[in-house]
Length: 415
Image (cartoon, rainbow, N blue to C red; front, side):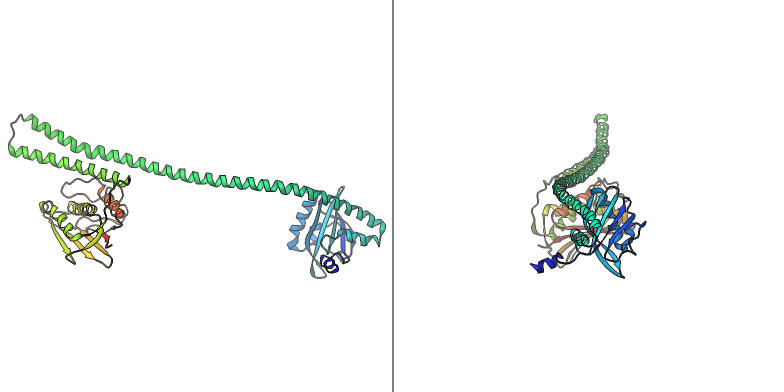
């Protein structure tokens, strides 16, 4: 028991200091000094200046707390005594227009300190002891108030947490709404572009077909077979252009709505590529373009959807011929790499700038390169190629320089 008492400091003789300050914290009188602070705590000086620099802010907070609550206990403040930093525990109460302050070396021992003072000066000690009893009673009241404050603090903390959670949810919803708004604005922009393309690309061929039909009817049968065939050919070209645009738009709708049907299988790309090339020998010949087919093996098996491969290869070969000047070459290559089959389609056309290559596979892209034989372009072909290639886990890229043609490379997994 004595050991415990000694540990708590209850059997030690408390030594300390007591003083009076005005409400501004200026020292009025040093009442008792058993520590040797008469050169630190001086009348007419601020209480906080007696302490070491790193404790002055805490000393100021001690005074604020004392004036706000009327009483405060056990503030540990550092003060230099005989050139040694010493930790003293200060308590205080308000007595009229003065601040009564006590500092002891032992935590929470001001009453014991005053009991010792009584042995020396009963009159002065009784006065101080009365103040400390007020302090103890005020502390009891303060503890009850602290319990209430603790409950209020917990409730406020819970409300604050709920408010913070609500704020986070609102922020999250706001971000989602901004994203949805941006998506809607993008869709609205694409819709406007789509309507512009439909108005332009369908109106022109329709007007051509109507005009040619009216010309034929106005002849009242007085037209040669050669003229009729020429008109029929022109109508056919316009109809094909309309059909191409509608087909592309339907392809995009199927891709973006997730309604595209995939059948992945290991297929030989060699005969499939030969079949695509045969379909373009005549269109290429009309522009005196030679198609060269090169393959490192007689078979090149890759994991793909056969219809998608045909659509991708057809689109890229069609573009190569469409954008190549008369008398040039187009190269189609099949290469076997370590774990992929590469299909390259290279032209000797106008080429693409680095900036154009960045938006090459975007929807409704219009580039500087123009068809060299009056062919029709919807600005949708490469966008469709990219989406189809992604759907079958393949990849597509383009190597090009302005004036040096373009090489489109599609790589398919082997398995």
